[in-house]
Length: 154
Image 1 (cartoon, rainbow, N blue to C red):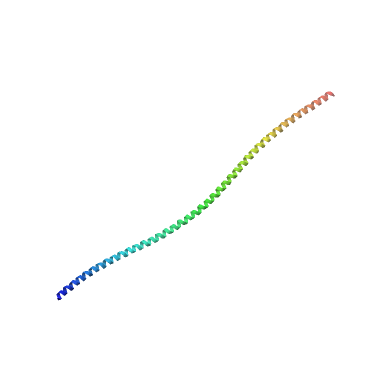
Image 2: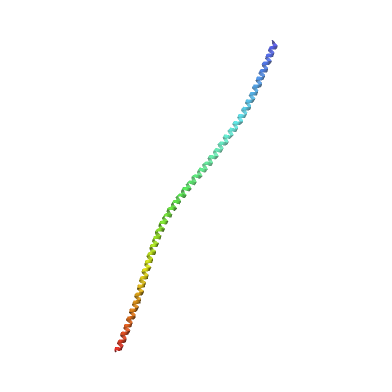
């Protein structure tokens, strides 16, 4: 009986040893798995931190681009306002130019009429002078003739 007990005890110890070895193997495997998971978790935390940093950099770049866009929009608005003013000035200049062109044409026509009138008056004056010179010559000839007739009569 003792021998049997002993054998059962040995068997129980072997089974227990085998169970312990299996438990140890399972514990080692669980520990390795936990270490692997801890490494993966650390790697995931690193990825999260890098993503946060990249996100912050992208946000800052976005803010810079947005500020640049607002600045460009304000600059564009200013240029559009200046362009509108320039176009308005150009329209006014064209209207004034047309008015001046009409006025210059009118003055040209009036100048032409005045020159024609001046030529006509000048011609009339020349004709009158010529006529006066002829009358004077005739008058002088009459006087000369009257003097001669008077001398002959005396």
